[in-house]
Image (cartoon, rainbow, N blue to C red; front, side, top):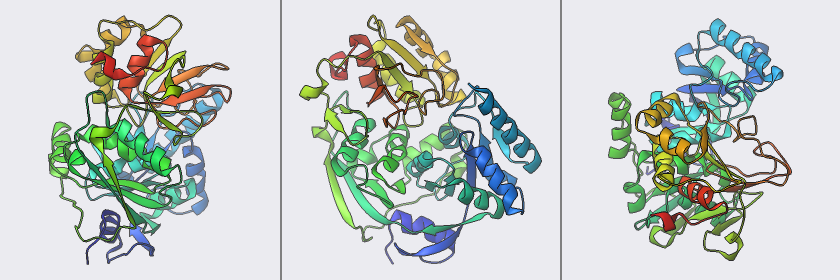
Length: 419
């Protein structure tokens, strides 16, 4: 029976063929929590009264949302997580290790996995050909304690991206275009499955960006077939043995097909306060929009390639007066590589400030909170009211290249002018 990627991956972990719309119990390969919701997950684990962890090697705790802590209440929550990790034997990634999803992409996530996390952007792992999705604290607690969870197999939407992206247009622009086109609820509880020659040629980092933001269209996951790009990534991180081929079945049933002509795409911007409120950078609304802060980093654009794209535009230039540039590497590995290859020097010379690896200001926890009435253009994943810590501020989403160009101009700017 031809299967979508979602059907195939869930069937592998249910031990039987599962079709879209069917509820089933599946084996969980890996489950994790983070410090924003992790203390509640720990409470639920204790309430269940079973094992603290079915298999400590298949679970992890991340301290990434406030890393280091910004408030005493958060610090107390961190103590609870450290104590749980010690008691359960689960691995803990403490302050400075980086964003959970990105760290897992370097160390754990592999094709064919089924992974859940207490964070909506767990769907990022779909870029590896893995079924990864976010769940609530109680569901994650049960999965850590039992090694299983329930799963309603989602219907799938086929997204065919064809053509060559023009210089200055990136994976971030592809996913912002898609979300703007179908809406923030356009794929609710569905699997967005990406294919086409643009996708075939896209790096693993680009796929990570797209998968990470699938949830911003309401999707349960954003899936890619595994291929040589996946294998190259795993090899780079010393994990080539983790490679498995996971491919689309050509005759699988999709509820609809969306086609995107990549050659016609322009740099995109999401306006406040919803991700689907998108404009092309050449749109009249983008003219003369001042920015007080430009932010690089987060789950969605926190790998080295993302910062390199911004650095290529900023090199030899300086940010505009009255504009701040904040850089938050996604992982310690990325931080080290940026330091070793001179990217730090580029950002510092341009007038930027560099944070420790983690989520930073993206969830509104620390290291870049906005002031009343300020505009920020950021390479993060969401721009809801108060997303970066202030309900009276305004967040615009864009690619790292567009963020860099805007930092130089002091307003929303087209990165293609610098290429």
